[in-house]
Length: 292
Ligand code: C2E
Ligand code: MG
Ligand code: MG
Ligand code: MG
Image (cartoon, rainbow, N blue to C red; front, side):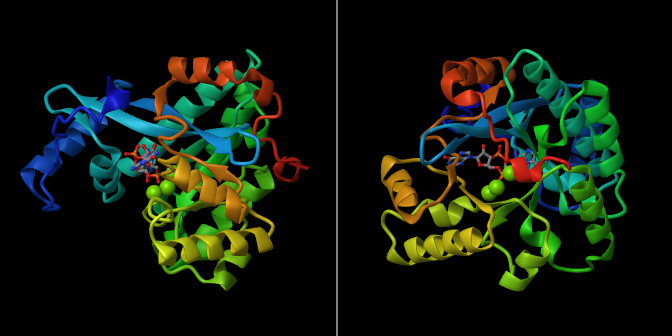
């Protein structure tokens, strides 16, 4: 099944890297059709508290099974969409799906925050705050039922429009996480100026903290920095007990990765989450990010 992708040994289809190749243009057309036909699915991966194993939310991750090419990884089609007019539609689609899922879970007592990945470009002159406001109201959800994850690339370049959208999201009460932290050029000052509630440390640093003294020091200093700013730290790509133990040792708040579980379709995720019902009552609810 899709959740096992990457472990099956089956080659994933990879589009040509050349930006204007006919192959990529065809794939863009296919993607648009897939959005229209609602062929794209979201899988959900829990974020687990490293202190007590409580569930802190789930991240929604796009899955696309192409009718001809089979499964295509988001890292192969999201960047393609990002360079085109399709990104807006893709993001709107993902947010709509996530809201619908959040509502379905929420109203059956599964109060789990769903994190949605958005592109840095979605924050430019964006209709995002309005879509979220309307959607949350329609489903009767509190703003913190959804979180947006955006890469630290938003910290660079022209920030005027971006800042405006971020302010609108903050006013709405929808929390923001900084994704893939450490891979870009973020400075402490910029991080401080940004209204984020969570920083996700990129898997490329987390993966080797059990073997590499350098990586251990880098991750520990990020965790310290994030804590000193009063934010929540999340380690991505936690695959082993050794890594999890070291994260606990440095005081990292939350872990996400194959050690806990792979991204799963909604029904499977619901079973997994309900199995942890004892820990699920307070699901990721940070009183300070609720709207006032
Ligand atoms: P991301 O937001 O950093 O998501 C984490 C990625 O790490 C996911 O890859 C997830 O499946 C993978 N992962 C989780 N645990 C482990 C682990 O223990 N080890 C390893 N090696 N990997 C792990 P995925 O699903 O292939 O997504 C890749 C990227 O594509 C995401 O990175 C995100 O940037 C983007 N993406 C995915 N879904 C969406 C979406 O709905 N919208 C947008 N704009 N981007 C998306
Ligand atoms: Mg993410
Ligand atoms: Mg990430
Ligand atoms: Mg990452």
